[in-house]
Length: 314
Image (cartoon, rainbow, N blue to C red; front, side, top):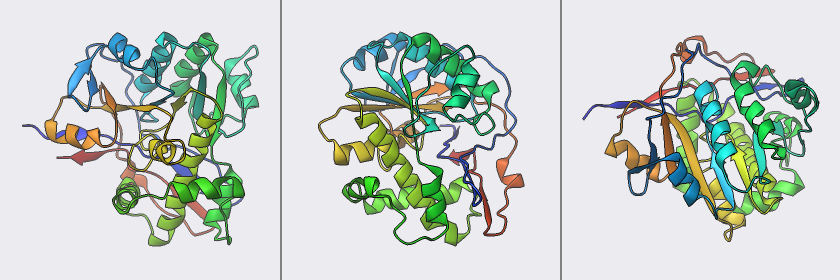
């Protein structure tokens, strides 16, 4: 059986001590249309589903979590089209691309409306994200932010004592990761940075990742139901938003759907995905230059943390 190359994007952050800005570093992408024949895979049964069948299974779910590779345009196009077809048309969309507490109020220009809500079109390139937001606008669903406030990330990386804000402390304690989940997150952050991550960066990065997931979970729980749009790492069952929701709101139903690049199916990889995702939506890979080639870490006054975009899974 052929070895399959799967791409997992956990998160990408650029930390500037003079004002921390969430950012994404992209490789060169090739424009391409999504192959409509690519399957949606139920990782439990290992059976493929049509979009209509998946929508039917989600009809009574409280929270639907849709992952992505940030730099894959097809993932944004697919998710926008998918949301337009979902039931519960007034169900809110909670996004990683805005800070928690922000809300999009559309005016004449979609991009201007997003900028007014704090959207950073350099961190989240408009050429890639515009199809998603144009379709969200058509859907007329309310859109709210969920990402961690930059001042919190800055406090953590600056080594300030007691950097966890009071609104996160209880949920942070309730959602403590298991040893295996903590190890998985740690290893993914190391691998995601091409094995070049300085050891002193690891602990603060893990705390930022955890608090970001808690912030997303809290944003969802402000509403009886909702759709989260975030990177595949944030929606993982073992250490992402589902793990937080299970710990602090176990009565709520949650389904996560990863959007993953692949060119085939492999039972060994599916077994791994079963513990991470409920469903996997496969899409064509895009062309990228090697992000590890240009990866560097500057002096402590300025962190530039770039995740490795792909890793082979055998």
